[in-house]
Length: 244
Image (cartoon, rainbow, N blue to C red; front, side, top):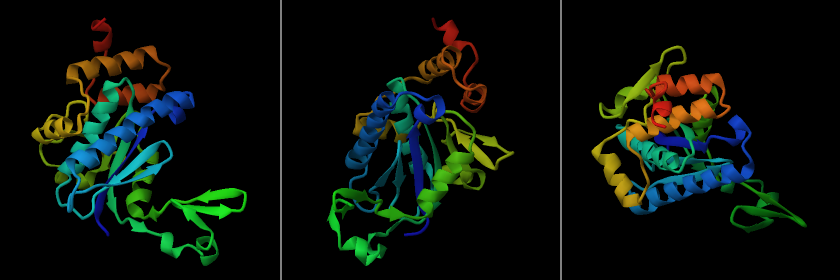
């Protein structure tokens, strides 16, 4: 199906700061649980159900059909990012659109003849584990994430911004043709409903502001990372220090 919205969310830490894999796994488990709850308890049925694919230390979440409004997409992503932040960890992601197709049937017959189970194929003593789907919904989200500025941010291409609606706060990044969604200050009736149904954690915007500012001051984060946090998420500099 083409034109499906998708977003990719990954845990900040391992690739950016070199955090130990154990710490990243804690965040990854939080991310997995939040996405699972969102799909199972908020959108369990056709035509609103979600399709999820794990990609390393992140997950791709996609709709079944094209949707003109991207408010649902951005709100789901924002709710999950707020949940991760409430546990003291950060995530980043990108929203895009494209196609997503099951490709298992196109694998070489020689490979399919050695099918074991759950996308796994026998190499005699070894195993080959494959990804069952691919498409531009995945590749474009990953490509956007790679070129976007550093930080715990949620990006979208500027031509798609009007489809977010007025309730989703954004900051344009004109040099790149992108926009950053201010997930820290995102507050909508849909967000409240999703948090309740999925039993997700959250903090008031002021608490998140202090946590992010404190993190930028006390951790060895790249300078660009800290600057982007304050500029693109409207985090007042020094608010974390004032909160101590």
